[in-house]
Picture 1 (tube, protein in one colour):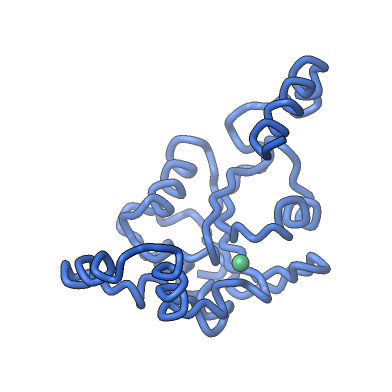
Picture 2: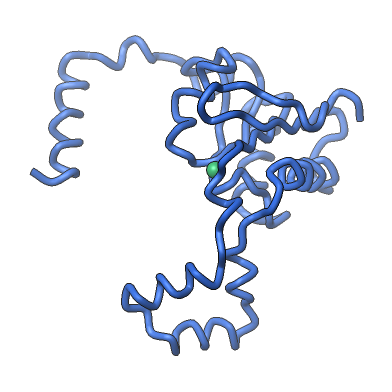
Length: 187
Ligand SMILES: [Zn+2]
């Protein structure tokens, strides 16, 4: 059985037995916040349990590293939509210790890409068109600095309303302990 058929089979049971009923809620976050966090597997349930969030409480935007790198990319757009269209009144950037992005080496990832069959010429064409692939694939040295940087970008974004607090935190992916990096109320 493939993973896909396994998922589809389970899904049929889930729907047939109405297991969804316990998750019924609306698209608006009851606690009126949006979280930008990392796609790390350890955070799927842990982050929500450790912050007392259940289905319906929060909008969540995820990517590798909880990094906001482009002021007009899809992450920033999602945060703005959460604030203006979905009643999120506060933004939380939550990075985590032991993040894969803290050890990501662009050069090494490009090696893996070519080992998997992508032609070196393809990389050259992309590089020659002005895209710095190494930089694009580079991680961060300090998760605290990365969180601060993302908070600053969101806070200073020309389309972000002044009254929206933007907080920065770092979570321990084993214990769920949160450390405050930026208190958005104090700005
Ligand atoms: Zn991570």
